[in-house]
Length: 250
Image (cartoon, rainbow, N blue to C red):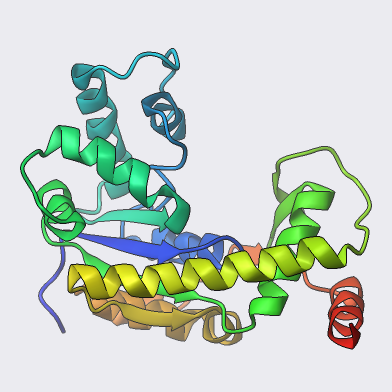
């Protein structure tokens, strides 16, 4: 088993299965509570992720330090390991704020080392990029982003609405998903980082085996994956299949 890591960063993009993987990691009891703590460009956005309320204009350095300390506590969850889900679109604003906290570092990797103590990296991506695009468009249209394993709604961001096939929007989401994956690959190369690469397809097919791989990568006992049940359910259905067939038919 590898030397335990003090932290890890799950690098991903929308509709790649990160909510499922985050729930599995948290349920293992040895990998913190990974969430998108740096989602949003403002310090007040970060504060909201950990239950703090700030004015949008309140971005002083003392306030940032307070919010960052709360993020570390929340993401560690008493396990001794800090977990972070980092969406590709959040990297630039996250690095700008971390540079305020830990100035003088020339690279993102050095900045993240200073912040989190040499984290391990996991790159979660979806090989079926068309399925990823369809999933995103449906979530945007219907407002429903995730269901719990029992079928109940887990995350809804807008009132219910019926999905409507939109070839142009699917094409745009497909291009964006491919761009985000390429940007992650470029970032890893620029930063000299070799992540553990995990696919959505493997995660969906065998959640426990994928969880065991990630736990081993961060230096935790892979056996902790045994018995950990998925906390989310797949949303793809006959509508998704119909949209795929129509898109491929042109």
